[in-house]
Length: 333
Image 1 (tube, rainbow, N blue to C red):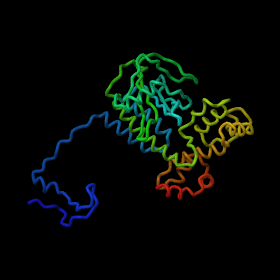
Image 2 (image 1 turned 135 degrees about the vertical axis):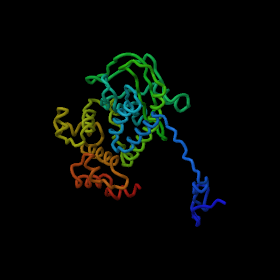
Image 3 (image 1 turned 45 degrees about the vertical axis):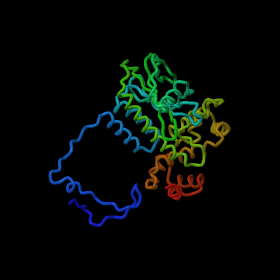
Image 4 (image 1 turned 120 degrees about the vertical axis):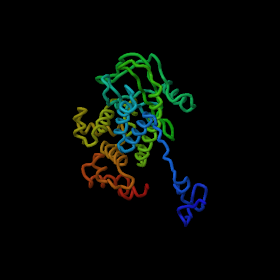
């Protein structure tokens, strides 16, 4: 007669409701001649994709996540050239993040954007309808970013893979083989599709951290206002701040070759907030994307976000959010 190893069943709540839970002692159930089951190997590609996603989850900074996503698709999946573009808040523009150059190197493409077109919409529509996890364009222009301009370096296939989260479309991953001219490999594209699905949810989680602030988040919207910019001054300043958030007004004025006073006036007129407030918002958003939920790394996250000291961070945080960092974080948990 079979017995359980736990003589005193515990009253617990299970998926089936409240009932007694009992322990199963497998050696006792199957007898003394217990055979160890064979362990079957899993496809290396799937393991690589899951390993890549595990690495991305460990990062708190959005730029790091997107840059490593490019590198991991090349290193783990074996894609030759990759670029990731995210939608702006309007859903009408695709904004660059990181990509691959003509030598196979990782390139910074955060300064470019373009209108979301029919092919991009079709890629998402096909994915939602279950008609395909990616869209392939044949005999398409293959481009790279050189010397502040986009150049066509050949023609061939391009795969457009949607990046989505549970909340909706976030962007697209583009990949091609402009360097070798090799044909598309379906197995790699399937791994890329799985990777993009995981990446979408990771990006969405990080964005939700930034969206906990009481203003329109700035971290993921760098180029989105550029098409409305009358003179490009604010675009250049915002780009400089996203590259180095510690720059002060004098340093930024030197970069764009105007006086500090003119920069302050023009920036506020174009952006609707002062340069100081914009920089503080950006730093606070970065802090919220870097800090642990429990607030165990407050000082480290504040310094990494661009604040010069904890005292400065604490003063700005309380001024802009009306509470202390720890109180704010505790309220979010």
